[in-house]
Length: 584
Image (cartoon, rainbow, N blue to C red; front, side, top):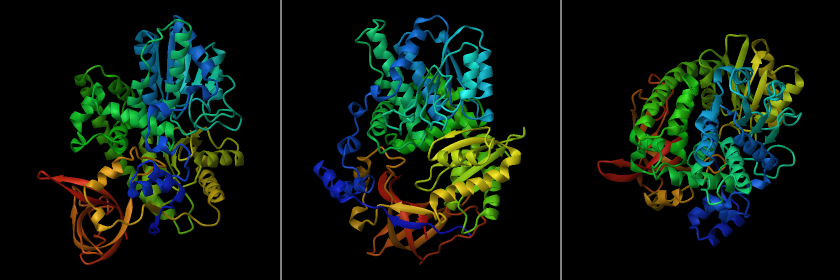
């Protein structure tokens, strides 16, 4: 039986609270900030994010050499190959690099060739990616990787042996043996001796590199010194950063996402105009949560069930009509993804139910179906059971592809995979990722050993106590605070995301009314009465696994809830609604 989640209050820093008050925040806002960081340094840059706060690109190791390589490639006549990952970070990286090269640096589109990875063949510069690059008939000046490459020495060596230089730009962990020796250059904040922020996404790294390319072009009199800066590219760097679930507690990431959201909400880009036509977010500005759940899911759907180039073409569309056509395909892909996801989720739930005990540290599930959906499955099952989870799909070629999600705070999946590789030689065909999310491919006959080693690796990190689902909240609110103006105070501290989570509050309520709603009758619409007697409307999404499951709560029950305040717009009226995260 799944453990009931513990609702706990976040630890608050008095020093941060005092500093936040000095910045002019209200007591309520200062308490939210104090619950999210214990560092008073750069607090103003965190609370009031601005592009001028971004760490200078010169702190990124090897960036000057990378810029020289790219400038030389620009000066040449051959093609520049952009080899990028297939997820939203990778697709936005491709957009950033292409837009910088063609629209800012004057490189003809005909000289840019995209080789975006394929989920079916795995993460990174794979054998398939190498084959696609070697099949290019034109002379190649340079291959630039983005959001991948740090763990791909063998494949980069193959390209080098054919006289093709590779400039790696990435943000994933560096393997124990170090950055790829055969690469002409590696730019990755994770490498030893680099003083840059380790939390930035791949699209941010390639943005910094292209910013340095601009400076080098100006220095060499190849670009006018008054040429526009690349700050407009923040538009889609924000999307890639949010989608990759990197920390939103650092000044760099907060600044780029904040600036990107401002540009997005101007709706000058055809892609974002098309998105507003599809979903206008009830007339509210697009925020980080909207980008993560409504936009990134559609971008990722392309590589999961169809063709990833649709996502790139959508972001690169030159008019709203063209963007709408690509978005229509992405939306169709997303609906197909959801249908396939439900089938695989049923498989995963059956396996998890069989494997899980109150002493379980992790779950490794072997599934059949679309390998592109396993990351979502790992997240769903991991959050449901409160343990790090790997969802693996049979590729039907002798291998399993896996996506892992850490779920539990302080779990480092990349470190876990590295330890596992040291216990068994050739366990992994490939692996990559970072602390909270990682991917791998293994021979199918090693599944049982992989499962055992994954359990041991997580146990080493957690110690003697198996993980229990925990919901961290910002404490209880008074009835008088629960008004629509509360949302304005919360929104002032955007953007929210990983390590800077959207506020969740806790409280004890009596159920006054409850009914099943939604197409599948799995959501609950409730009226909840506080201890002081105030009544609030609430919605509890996915309270039931399926329609046949009995409703877990009835009128008159006293319950403890973790919830997020939200606005409900109905019949021209706006009221506060509680969006329930858990009810026990």
